[in-house]
Image (cartoon, rainbow, N blue to C red; front, side, top):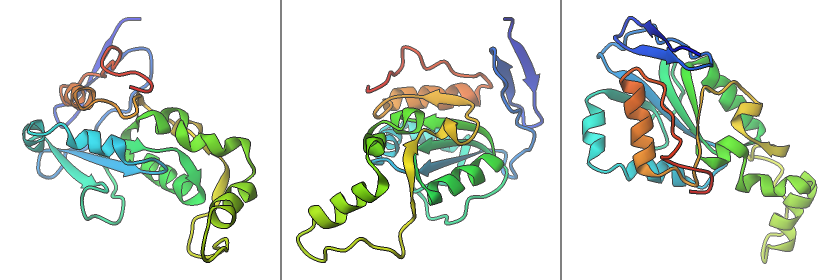
Length: 206
């Protein structure tokens, strides 16, 4: 299939390589690309790997603006986000609500790491009923205060699920976690207006 290239109003170009990619149409007020990262049911290792880009982050800072992330002190997911990386499986009603909100407000959505791509470690509980999981965590394994909390916690879904089973995902970046070089490659390719192919840069369980 031949590649098609679209021009967008903020200078990006988006190549289509056999799948549909949402075109970036809005220009950020400061000329930078709005990037968000989200942490659902995961260990935060993918975000730690993002930070392991180290001094290369300085170069990215000239081109992108982090508008929402556990790495910054912003509480509400904004509108008009160009790229969002989601770490973690969708395991609770809160997670499910969040991914729908992110999808509505994001132009290009990336499943970030194996838990987002396959549900991975969080899905180990899927063979058990939710009541069995809660009983194991709060009763059988507890020394004190053996009680299952009924208030103040999100409701667990029957199964932990990968992000693409809940909303449409535009790009998959596997790895547990993805290496920092792979993350930098993907972000860099997007900033150059190309859809990155992470094959050879990372793999499941890498």
